[in-house]
Length: 327
Image (cartoon, rainbow, N blue to C red; front, side):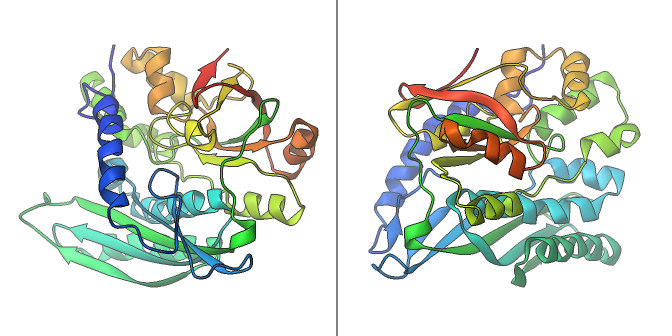
């Protein structure tokens, strides 16, 4: 069976380092910091009043999806993905995106690829409703092989302090899952290993493997505008549902998810069968068709599912210790 560790990504080591990183970050704290490291985006208040603006920021990359994108010539898609990924992180705090900065590191400045990537970034910024105000394009032939590049970016949004969404779930709440379009931007080290070991040409499956990520900020804005009681949100990225929904639970609640309660895009079962991946590993690595979760009171779950296209109840909150279980 293939697994993420064999592909070079050790989720257990990553989890162990987070505590040390959190401790180092805490030594830099200053007035204005809310919550510290650990949620999907950092938060910094520009005042003490309930209406004071809070800056919400997230930095992320597209990961090794860029290698498949370069091989398949789908540069614009990953340009869009890097913006959408960060916007989805920022909206978990209820913030509206303000601006974005990108970082593109390349072997050489091939104008077509670079312009396609930045064109994808700009198109996504227009879709999100934020400004692309700067960034960095670095040419580093000694670090990157010919034809390869790396792409990352930072999104900053804002929300009034009294509207900041922070995890506050209660037993009896419902977990609403919002569909993903497919792999989004995570698990590609394992995907690439499977393709290589099975001799599968990624160009024949580019539409499924490189399908652009779904943007959730508009869905969240709609829920907030309708007055939904949101007690936590999670962007399902690397680590799957167990490694991301737990961040919206706090220390005293668990989430029990109903296996099979949502539609699973065919690309996941295709990869599972092609690579002989266990179901447990699939859950740890991929979103499996749920790209975003919203925790709401049970009485509001149906209304939330009506407001957000494709959303459905996928589980419930129970007393616990901040873990995610599959029934």
